[in-house]
Picture 1 (cartoon, one colour):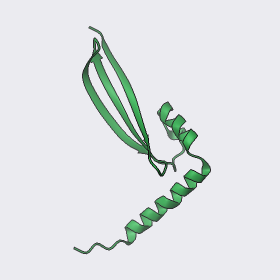
Picture 2 (cartoon, one colour):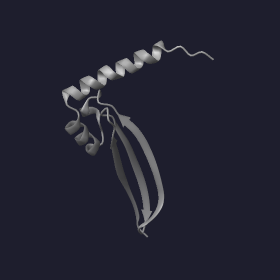
Picture 3 (cartoon, one colour):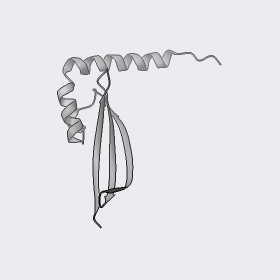
Picture 4 (spheres, one colour):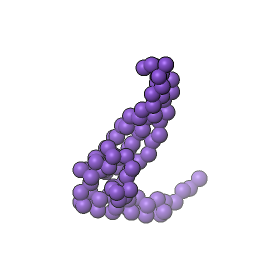
Length: 91
């Protein structure tokens, strides 16, 4: 009757360089899954790679995000924010 806790990390790379990260925490007893929970978050190209806690996600970010990708993401993000502020909603 041995309990085991492990994690599985799933990373999806979006077109603009964002990383969708899902971390599953799995509790097993004698190879039978008793519990599974999922935590999701997004890592954007404008963050410092040194602030990424998960080593697998950090390695993907470092290999994927060059200066051009980071600069383009920052410009596109600013445009999206500016556009969202100028929208007029008519009920």
